[in-house]
Length: 192
Image (tube, rainbow, N blue to C red; front, side):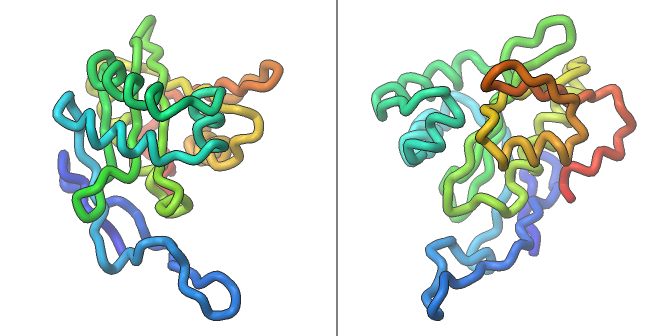
């Protein structure tokens, strides 16, 4: 099943099955059939939704994303800073709720830093790949040659996303720098 990419009518792959958790109990994950996720560009009008997404992250997700278990007040402040300072932001929406975001910052010498956050109930459904694809499309049009992710060594989902995007990885103590080259052929298989 696929969702819709609002900017360019490109679908979001959300075809991973919803699996019950042991003993026949249903998963707390939302049913993919009940919603159609779509990706769209974010602006300052989305600050409250970004803040709600970030405040909804659990402690380990906040550590993976920000390097520390930031407070809700810090998440709200960050959301305000991000919508004001990002060169590009895109979000995935389902049933009118922001469930994932990619932020692209500070383009210097063709290199832009990207950061992601995805609601825990919507992970492992290809949203990170869809968001990276949106950032890649924007970066190609904006003259960006490399998208750089900074990843905690323990953040395996982000490491897998970097691997799918054929990123070059550099390990430095507890952090990984993952560079996705946009000058490569357009056939990057990041949605697989």
